[in-house]
Amino acid sequence: MIIRILTEGQYKLEGDALVELDRMDNFLLDAVEAGDAQEFSRRLQEVVSLVKNRGENLPHSELVESDLIIPAPDTTLEEARDLFAAYPRDLTQA
Image (cartoon, rainbow, N blue to C red; front, side, top):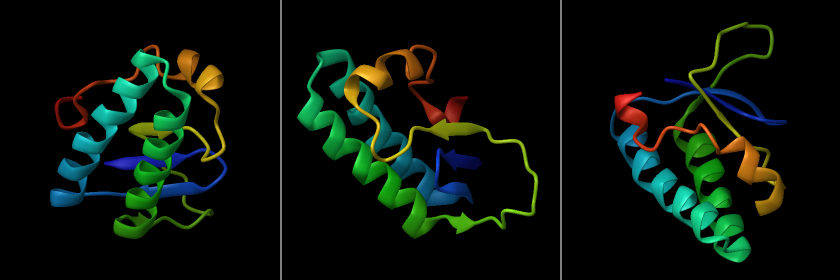
């Protein structure tokens, strides 16, 4: 799966890392639904870190359509509400 982190670039994530992202991402969506800004910020940082540390960073010169877009690491809960309106709950099923 090709994942874009806004302002950070694109990463290719596969296998166990994708399964882990799916699990972590659900906690992120829970924080958005609960309106918990502190938990949202913590979970977003975890998701961004996982993608950056376990994904393969694609060169900026390589143009590939993203399967998933994750907000920039400094996104606020208020900004995220609209971004996550159509966000898939189960990434491995999307």
